[in-house]
Image (cartoon, rainbow, N blue to C red):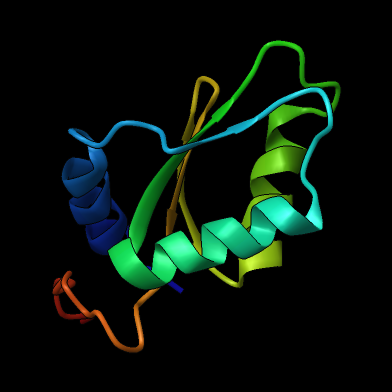
Length: 99
């Protein structure tokens, strides 16, 4: 689990990122989860937009994305989800030390 300090750090890192995925009417599906996992391995931190036509609640979508990609939900703000997962091969982000 991420600490409050680590989440704050990741939110600031994600601030300038543009959403690279969109969850629409079809909701969360397996193909989308595979693509997001690949993006997390390359980038460690991704932003995802939940479109207005999505029929599921945004909280459920955010939880499904985090669970399906085995990542940490950093923030759900408005209709934007920020996910973090430490990369195995492309580690770029150095989190603040847990205390």
